[in-house]
Every structure is written in structure tokens, then in C-alpha cells.
Image (cartoon, rainbow, N blue to C red; front, side, top):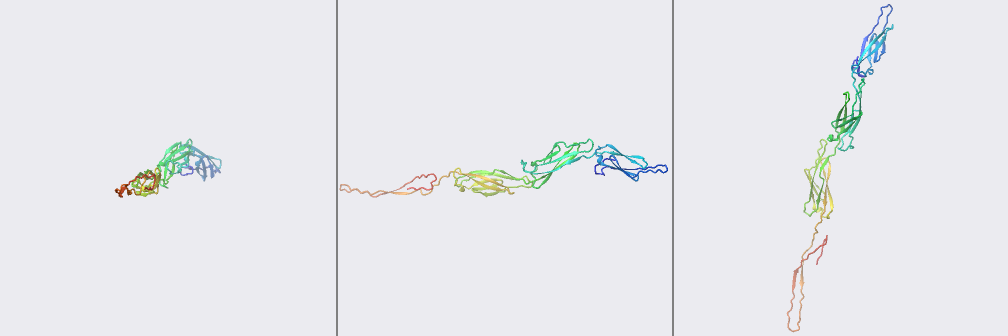
Length: 360
């Protein structure tokens, strides 16, 4: 018979059968082999009505290597004391080694460069035994690259580390498997299977988000420009910043094909003093709801003062009529009354920030 696997009666031939009888020609001698069960070294033999059946105990021969042969000798004794050996040859086979440990794990997609954002490692153990004499397989220390990460085995403990750059395209709830095969020194293979669950990745907004303009005179055009874009590595996510025009506190921002232009409304910043800085914050919203602020710094300048009023006038110079009475009784000519009209122009200098002035 042949060694098989424990608990698998069909794996090999585990039963041997035969017959036995005894006779004696002497008158009155009628020996028999009585029904019995006898335990041998590797199994047991049952005798019933002259038919014996040997059943191998697989647990006692698992150490046999392929081709090894051992014998189990069981002695039957007849009623007259006659003995007969039943000899069973047992041939060994190559037993499959037994691998033990934990062969699955799970990790979760996280952000690039942030090992703490999610669970990015999984751990477990693995070992191997072989009951065959002289067979001592091992799983040697190694590092194996998988599709989405790598597995390191040290002294029977394995650690799987997820490579986040290879799973950023996963959507929330997506699950993929990374199967890494470990091979023992006798060629035995065992798969370690890691489940990787996707998460919702934050979209990435790129471009220029600040600008600066300077207050000028009414009618003066002051603008700032920049760009904005958005991307999302998750499969099927393609957010965009649509063309739009938005009104801010001090001006307006127009977005066309990813390029924004901010135009200052000079009428809203004339009150700024030189060096004053105010900010105009305008928020753009992408199709997936992502928001990005565009912040414009507006710097005030010194405005020229504005003079208002009436800047011309007229006065009339009057000359008194003088009558002279000479001592001689000669009539002197009288100076007639005359008038002179003149236009007087005045140059006014107003103090800084004067609003009005009077002149006489």
C-alpha cells in the first residue's frame, strides 16, 4: 500500500486485504483463526471469517519520503497456537508541504506624500512545514513588487506598502486587488492578496490666484491678469472653470478659457490715499463645486485736488471830481468826472486739501 494524505482515504491505496485459514489432518484437531483485530506499527488488521483487512493509519507514515518503504508485520495466532505473520509493505510519497499564516490584507488609497492620510500598509505572517524526513522548506526574506505596491518578507512576517501614485485614479469605493506570490525554498507558492479601496481625491487647482492694480484717474484703465485650471485624477472626474464674469467690490473679473482679467472700477477707489492698499476677493467655482479665490491688491495714489468756483470778476475805479478855485478870478477848467473799468485776474493758491476759498 501507499502513504497518502491525512484524512483523504481516496488519495492513495490505504487498505490491503487477504485471507487466512488453518487445517490439521490429525483426527480431532480443528484449529481456527478466530475473528480479531490486531494493532500494528502503522495500522491495524481486522480478521473476520478468514478474511483480513489492513487499514493504514496515515498519521503514522507522513514522515516517509517519496519511495521510502517500511513494513508492518502483524502476527495472527490460531487456536492451537500456530502463528502466522501478515506483512504489509508501505511505500512513502511526497507530501505536500503545509503553508500557514495570514494571506490577505487591505489598504486604502490616500493622498500622495501623506502616509498618515489613510491606512497604507497591511501586515501578516507566513510559514511552511513538511512532515517528510529531511524536508525543511522556508520562505526566505525577500521584497516583491506588486502592481500597486510592494511586499517585504522578514523572518516570516510580511508588510505590504501601497504606492499611492499608482492608485490615485480610483474613485471612492472602487476596490482593486494586488496579488503577490511568495515562493518557498522547495518551490511551494503562496499568494498574498491585498484589497485596495479607493477614496475621493481632492481636485488640484493650478494657476495664478493674485494680482495687483493701482488707482488712477477716472477713465484710466487698470487691469490684472492670470490663469486658472483644475484637474482630478479620479476616473470620470473632469471638472472645469466655466467662462464667466463676476463683480467684485472694486471691479470685475472676467474668465475666458482659463484666463482671467480683473478690471478696476476707478470710481470706487478715488477715496484711497497714497499708499493705501485694499483687497478685492473674487471667488471662482468649478463644475464640481471646488472654489478658488482670486485676490487683487489695489494701491491708492495721490489725487490732484479739484478747484471749483468762479475765477473771473470786474471792478470799477472811481475818480473824485475835484473843483479848484484859483485865487485869480480867472475860471479854471473843471476836472470832469471819469470812470475806468478794469478786469483784474487773481492767481489763487489753495492749501493742501482745501475744499473752498474766498477772494475779494
